Amino acid sequence: MSKKKLWLRSAASAASAGVLALALTACGGSDDGDGASASTDKGGSVSEGKGKEKAEEQPEEEKGGGELAAGEKATSEFDEDGTKVTYEIVAQKVDVGTAADTEKLVSDPKKAAGLVPAVAHVEFTVKDGGPVADYPDAGREIQVYADGQRGTILIGASDDAPGCEKSTDVKDWKAGESHVFCDTYMVPEGAKELTVQWAPDRDTDPFVWKFENS
Image (tube, rainbow, N blue to C red; front, side, top):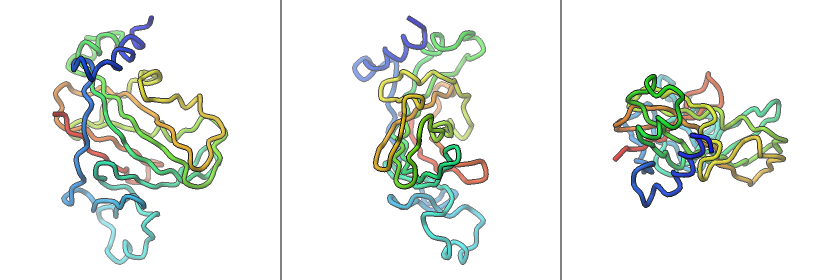
C-alpha cells in the first residue's frame, strides 16, 4: 500500500481519532473584505476599484469574485475545452493533516518541515451549458491560502481522499449534476486561517471562502 493511500484511508477515521485530520468550519463573509458579500444564488461581488456606476450596470451573475459566507455558492461561466459551462461552486470544507501525515506524503520530509497537508473539498454543479464530455478542468483551479499566503500544491494527493472524486472518472456531465473535486496544498502547521479560492481564469478575481483553524 502506498504512503499516500495509507494517509487518505486513515483520514476516514479522523473524526473519532481526532489526530489525522481536522475538519474546519467556515466563517461568514466580512463586509470589510475586498468586496461585499456575494448573494447565495448569484455569486460574486464587485471587485475593488470598480466604480459604483459600473457595478450597478453590470448584471449580478457577471461580476467578478469576492468573499463568500459559509455555504454561499458562487456562479461562474467556465470554458471546458471549448464547451461553455455555467457552474455553481461552493467550498465545503478543508481537512488539515499533521506532521506525521507530511512524512507519509512527501518523499523528502525535511524539505516540508513545518508544513502539513490541507485538503480542500469543492462542489461543482452544472447550472447551464454542457454537457462536459470528459476530463473536466474546473477542479484544477482550486487554490488554498494559509494566513494570506498561497500553499504549495501536492499533485495527486487527493485522488483517493474520502468524499473526493477524480475528474478522470467524470463523463458526460449534464446540467443539474454535481461532483466534488479536491486539491491538497502544503501549508504551515498552526496556520490560523485558511481560504479556498477559485476563479475561472487568471484575469478574474477569485471567489474566496474562509475557514478558521480552531
